[in-house]
Length: 87
Image 1 (cartoon, rainbow, N blue to C red):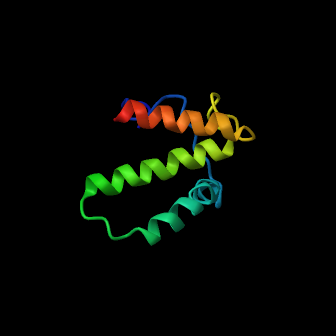
Image 2: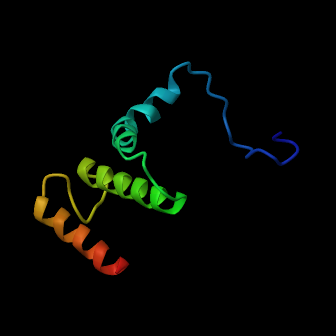
Image 3: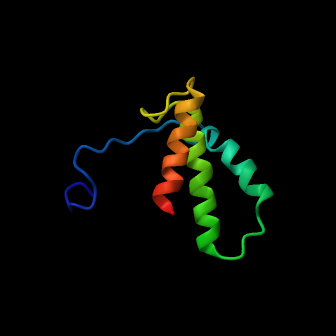
């Protein structure tokens, strides 16, 4: 696949049995939230709600530089600015 150009030439094969668990653990909380909201009427509303869950989780973990994990006022202002921009 590398010779044919289908795969990036620097890609490496990782043979770790539990590599996917790291990703799954990160989404565990999101999965629990989505399970409670399975009554979505359309795909659009479902995708928008899940994106919202993901954004709030990222903010809480401190992965947004503008809103650190330990500064609740900055987080609130950031979320308010997001909703103002979307409206």
